[in-house]
View 1 (cartoon, rainbow, N blue to C red):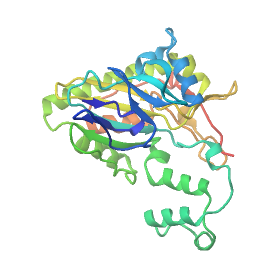
View 2: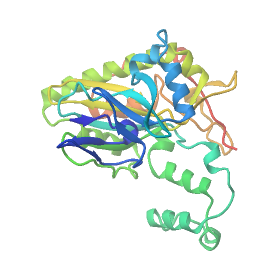
View 3: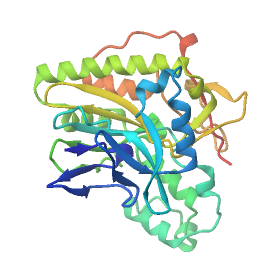
View 4: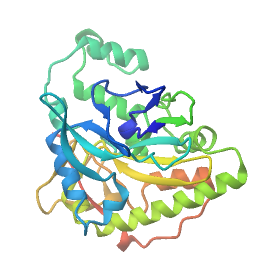
Length: 313
């Protein structure tokens, strides 16, 4: 049985033994039937409490939250719905949303580090300047470099990982930056090769994305929270059943009033607006449509969703 790979965390149970395939090694535990337990943090708990309100339009697009439980002495976990429980041999794709996927607090220190310089040079030896090669780089510099290396900065999302049935997970997409490259990954790595099955899954997921777009437009939660590092979880199985959910709210928080802006008018200057989430015309659906060859109805600019934004210090 495969247990929900929330936040790119892919797990399964083999011969009664809990096996973790990726992700933070101490963040998840198997729960009761139909649930998975994730280590609790205040931000994520508050987010799920807000999302599980009956009148919240996004409720059907997020895992159900049941309660906070003490699974290990002194350690609390969030008991969440296992999104894969109803799928047979599921295939999963984790898509990280946003042009920035880290909090300001994570990169507040201005200290330069040689270890981060080494990581940067391993990925691209020509990226650091001569001064940086001599003195190291800050965490902010490294994190921004990582965002630009992938499709996060220019498309507003990146593919974190894919797992097809019993196959091992694939997470080698960090340098897939252009729309055509991402569309090719979706087409060749994620979607099934059978044309009829692919058509069925694409149509279901396309409809689900449109429904999610409408829900985001009606959601008070979405209008009043900053979603940093959240993901969309795409799932289908061998029967052609498919679904999409929003996951990973560990960096989600309420923001001050009156900071809504149209998504597609994001400033790209240093110190300007640096956050993107889902909207009617964001790049994520465009790349998906390119891979799936499914048209999306035109949406008037007046219907563009607006999102809370975060400002880079």
